[in-house]
Length: 488
Image 1 (cartoon, rainbow, N blue to C red):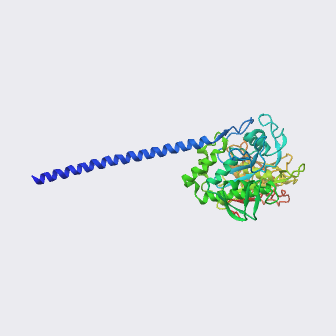
Image 2: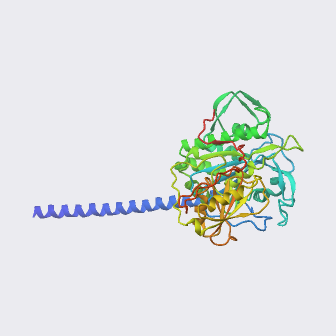
């Protein structure tokens, strides 16, 4: 009898333990579910909060025929506004009563393969053609007026800057972000400061900074003074200040990489909260899009992030201003438009050339000489004919402002264009919907190489000796990469 009672007692205890475990498991599951729900709710709330921080602007205002969005490479115009709102002072120079100007203008070009990115500085003192009235769709760059670059923002906001840039360069701007002084300060503080290197001590009352020589870490306040000062360091020119700003941006990129910013939710939130509070952007550039862009370039090396300044020369009418140096600037914008390497640079090794699938005899090639080297197009047509192409010369007056070789083809005819492009090292491909099938046009610009044999050439006749050469391409485009030593 006693053994039965003991057995019953053990059985009851086991059942009680099972019930407790079941209750505890349910509590854990319910608790885990609550945590997941809480995290998800916080994530959504955070995203809505950060998105809500961003002001919005219509960048298509005043544009009648602005191109549609593109699918692959990405161009983001970043404008630094010189408004002092939000920092509680009118320091860092004299406040502009007539409204804000664009203190800094950067076009960030991200390649379609996400293997390179260019950050192009547009000097604020550049004198260029601009629409007389940016709000009027019929007012264009061609029919406009000569104007200092930073006045475009003052006259018509981001939309006017976009309209002017696209009209001058043919480069389509996908997104715009405007950051003011307060936002810049907060972004630097969100990174925990940024390292800079000064060749000598700097005391600049206008910039509100007093710094010793050498490498040092700056907080947001001093960093803003550092990137804005002109008269105290160097020759006082805006171009030299741009060089300093590019070095600072390199240091920011190095800091974000060193601290694994994207992998630190606390620091990332702090940085994004600071950035978005003082940001105005186009309607499509929200937090989700920004994070998507950031993730798409997460494997981009610091040596693949290149800083460039639009090539300039003195503006004759005013020695305190500059104008874009043509055709060097055209060569730079062509590289952005066509998503190719910068003038004078070579593609990175290890890239496999696509197989040529269209025979030369199937392709009609029209050759245009866009240089002032007489006879260049006729010579190149003969070299292409010798390889089986059906080549002819396009008689059009040269502009003398394009660089390299551009191979234009109809929609769906990229394979034929690749066969032609194989004859010219570094040739760019471009689509033209008006070209007929199996017709490819070759445009020879400054620095264009002479034709070489394509791998799938037909016939064995030797190519004629090249006696005419294109004038050399401009070499004024200077660059720096984000991995360079800040003290270098």
